[in-house]
Length: 408
Ligand SMILES: Cc1cc2nc3c(=O)[nH]c(=O)nc-3n(C[C@H](O)[C@H](O)[C@H](O)COP(=O)(O)OP(=O)(O)OC[C@H]3O[C@@H](n4cnc5c(N)ncnc54)[C@H](O)[C@@H]3O)c2cc1C
Image 1 (cartoon, rainbow, N blue to C red):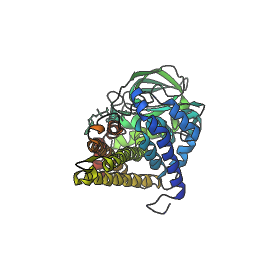
Image 2 (cartoon, rainbow, N blue to C red):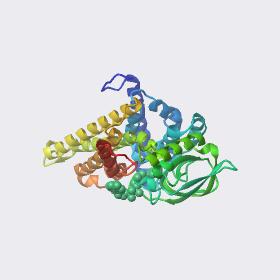
Image 3 (cartoon, rainbow, N blue to C red):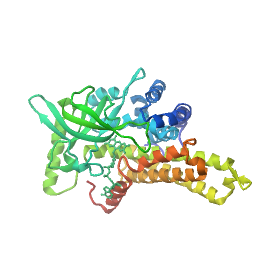
Image 4 (cartoon, rainbow, N blue to C red):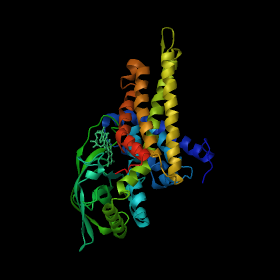
């Protein structure tokens, strides 16, 4: 286990500075344009692929950093550049984590490279769990996966919504119901390979923020995938379902479902994205407050402004520490006895929403225009309290964990 320290090591600092350079030189200058275009910034993703930021190797390296800080550090820097573009760069990672968390070695080796493509032909991937009637309440999912034993194929039917990269992805990871009696314990995850008939993009959403990131419905109409596309394999699924049925009979301890495993692994990373956006807005506000003069002096000379900046910075640093703690716990296999992952996501996302709003206030009229980036950052920040579990759901998870009540 890595020794505890509050400092990044030399290698981490080097990676952080390299990512910061990419965020400052490539992502930030493109942010306003792609926000207006509301399209996937393929050229920027390609740039990221060329320098090695958009690749499995890069994420694996950060993921396996023994301190746990590799992923949060990377997320903070990229999202500091711009949230919409950064989500287009890291969105594939959510699907990849779904495969890493539940897939066999062979599935990981086969599908993750196809999620990213290569620098000459970049691809993206989508993780499809949410449905029109199953957002926070994952257990009410309706998309069905039925096994066709004669052909060793699974047949998927249903409608997914809010899928980042949905419909434009090369590989879709779809969570579906395999046993209707078991609620969220009867779910399993499937790979839908490129070009599979029956999968189509539905509505593409026009959003408040992170507009460079593609979000759409995914329609599954008799989508047939080979048995090998069930993540983890049939034997493991049958064992898991048998255990869940047994526990349901005894009314005992609940088992984790596939989607929940993915969310738990990714929540501190979402917290880190929020820290990146909050820090970006804070820095713009700090510079502005030092240079904007009213009543014959810089506005930062007023306590009313300086105290806001003090609170902003304090909250951002506190959020980062919660994120780092949860990431360290995850990588070192520490049990989340107080739902520390959810805590980090809750605090960081609420901080990002608040801090970006304060930044607008400090910039006055300019803050309210698209001439300055803080209004975009404020629109972007609103997503962090919604996706990967809303703030209310994080509180529910924390409260139930503290109370010792099962989380369904
Ligand atoms: C831009 C974007 C990208 C997304 N990307 C993905 C993706 O890639 N893959 C994917 O599967 N999903 C994705 N999502 C879906 C996201 O995870 C859901 O939107 C989120 O989980 C909330 O579900 P919902 O929108 O149905 O809201 P609802 O669940 O309907 O919630 C509405 C409100 O009710 C509150 N609420 C609900 N239940 C409770 C409760 N028990 N107690 C207190 N309050 C409650 C919620 O907190 C919220 O405020 C994305 C969403 C967006 C907007």
